[in-house]
Image (cartoon, rainbow, N blue to C red; front, side, top):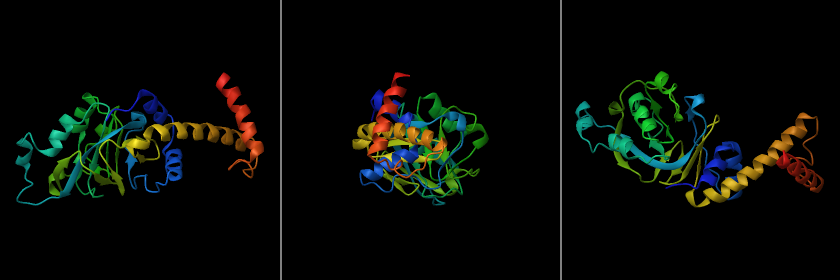
Length: 238
């Protein structure tokens, strides 16, 4: 599940907007989770391979408060087994009417070195989670315990989160805009392409701020490509 340091560092420096464009060039149209937003801006960006938990709707005769006494309960087991550097991704079926997890579990993930957590449902204890240095993304705050809506069924199998397919080991990238999913086999190439695209967009932004038209600039014509190459050499020297 581990990423190379180079790929990790590159992905920490690019935006989900750029990543989704690069993925589109590779034929992937559905890579950005819908309705998922960051709780703690100071948590920084998020990069790591996915470790997944899947919920189905709760059932009253099964999902009672005593289930957490079972050390094999998938939610509790997942929190203790999610690898350091991975992202705990929870399929909550887009249902934020009960919490997918809360502040204590998020603190435990942070202490274990997990890179972050994402759900298309809700987290509880969000004022506390907002103070943690681990990136956390959800749809909306939700105080009720997960047991009234969610039954945890399995770990580290393919899930859906925010309308996007997430396979274990897929690379999760989160920033201030939201969360993108990169198929694992493309992560290294996408990281390099996204960094190159980011450099070009920095050049374009500088030109537009200077009053230049986007015509012939974005997308670039041959003159602009030559200008960008010169700009790159100058900025790499700096």
